[in-house]
Image (cartoon, rainbow, N blue to C red):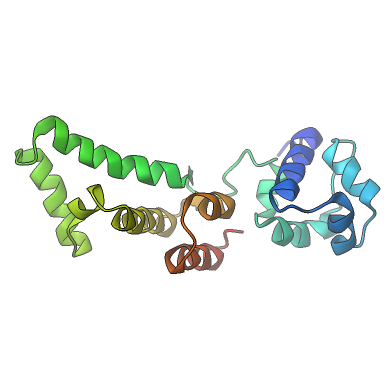
Length: 177
C-alpha cells in the first residue's frame, strides 16, 4: 500500500470539518498538538500508527479509510451510497412506467421482491415514508452482503429516527466506522 500523505491529510481534514471539530479539539482528544493535526492535514506528516485506531473512532471511519485517504473500501466488497439505494427504488418505479404496471417482466420483479421481503414494494413509489423504509432495507441488504456504506452518508441522507439509528448500529456491528 502506497501512502499518500496529501490524500490522507485531506481526508482527515474533511472528516474533522464534517464533525464540526477544530484542529485544537482534535489534537486535545488525541493528546497531540494542534500543529500536529495541521501538519497531517497539509500532508507534511501522517499520524503515528498508535493514534490511528483512536483517530478512526473519532472520525467515524476505518483505519483503512484514513490510510487510503478515503479512496478505498477498506476490505469491503464495494462502497454504496444512500443515493444509490434511492436510485434503485426509482428505477423499479421507472420500469413500471416504461413497460406498464401489468407487464410480465415488471410483475415478475415486483412479485419476487414482495414474496422475498413479505411486503408490497409498490407502496414505496407513492409514500415518502415507505420509500425511506425500503431505502433502509436495500442498504441493510448491501451491508449484509459485505458492502461498505459511510456512516456520514447515512446520517446526511436518511431522516433522523429509529430506522437511521438501526442502520448505524448495524454498520457498527459490521465494523463500519
